[in-house]
Length: 225
Image (cartoon, rainbow, N blue to C red; front, side, top):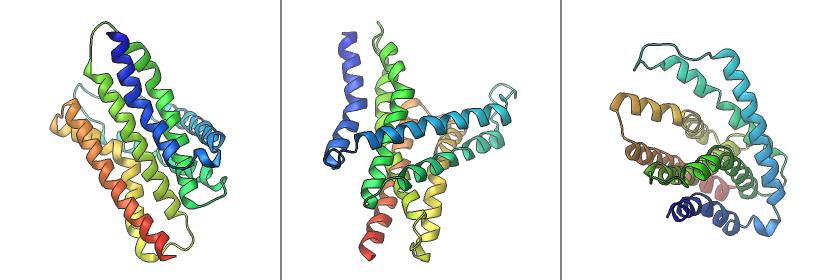
């Protein structure tokens, strides 16, 4: 029974990535190693972020239940490094915008999936007791995939030299939402005392809204050129 539960969680977490890779056309471009390089860039960026946070942002020592608003906001600002990393990956790949976006997003999201969720699923989902948090973790990995695709698309649009002036403001707003999404969700959790399923729903709604706006701007920009 525990192996069956692990199989369900594993399939729910990893199969959407495989399906996205196959159906997006990346397999036809033999982009596997490009995605691996994007994943290696993710690891390097996360290492730099960890060193920066450990050096300049010590552990919060406030009272129980207190929320360090300024500290958490500054920590989320460090996620700007992810934007730079995605831009670096896309600038090193030649091809259409769609290809660059998908390579960067797939490599980035897959590396995060392996590094942050593989061991918890392998150890926890095979445990004796059933726990919904591993199903939630699998759903969260799918949300992260959509999030990174949207983020890569917004970064690609923002770095275009021919981006119309009317697009600058909405693209900048979307960039800010991509960077501070985790901070906003933590703030909602602290203020409204949200449960785990509600948090997952809020994260899915926010990611979906950002993704739809990014898709609309991307399609409009591509068709206008």
